[in-house]
Length: 286
Ligand SMILES: Nc1nc2c(ncn2[C@@H]2O[C@H](COP(=O)(O)OP(=O)(O)OP(=O)(O)O)[C@@H](O)[C@H]2O)c(=O)[nH]1
Ligand SMILES: [Mg+2]
Image 1 (cartoon, helix red, strand yellow):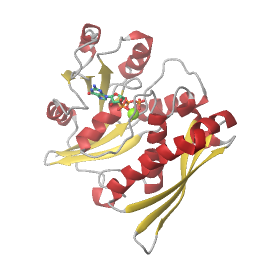
Image 2 (cartoon, helix red, strand yellow):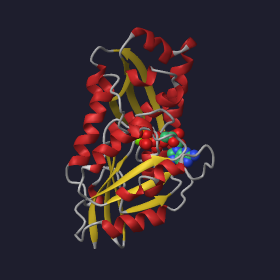
Image 3 (tube, protein in one colour):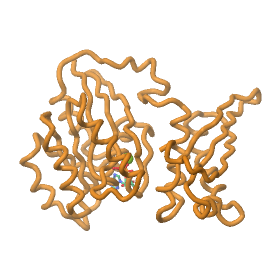
């Protein structure tokens, strides 16, 4: 049997969380077209007859730290990959140029003395492509695999490679004790993440980077409805206005999208009471 920890690393937006969701066959990590959607390492467990893989989805590392949020996020990623990881899956997006940012992440990964798999993602997209620039990195890796995380292409090849490099051992996470199948997140955090994803998908420009989501209460009512009380916290009044939108249209949109997804995930009716607050300490919830 094989068992170990695999870190998914790469710059923002390459598709790390999408890959994790595809491998697990369920949503465990939120995704969006905006960089640094993932803010803290998310642990999810994959098991089959070959053994157990504990995946760590990490936030994409920014080359230039532009604010307090990304400084905190970068640090978390670096700390995660420096301890207790058996195999690193380094993901790149061939549709974007390599640039400085990639070199920064590569610099961090280069120092690790563990097996490394280079995963070139988004091969469902043919153009634009900078494949040559990424193929150039292959000497530094034990194996290179081209995949489409979104379209579930070549994922079994990747799993084969991971099991090949994973150490022999017994599974060390008892998945039957996890709050949700395969996923090591409590429900408040999971719900807050779904809400934050909908905010990321709907809000423009810098607003997503000035918010945090927080769940205050989850209650199973007698009528079978799950009642959830949650808040979006933001740094400034001008953002609060944008999150609420004209006549409350934006917050309604975010709230409805989150509720729909939570209803499907929980297979129950959900009532979501979502409010927006300006909170100078919002960053403590990031
Ligand atoms: N065409 C295509 N798009 C993809 C693929 N994988 C991911 N994407 C898209 O790329 C965007 C970013 O995906 P994420 O999974 O959030 O990326 P990430 O690497 O986790 O990003 P951070 O959490 O910000 O570091 C989303 O819009 C995805 O739908 C793929 O294989 N093909
Ligand atoms: Mg992510």
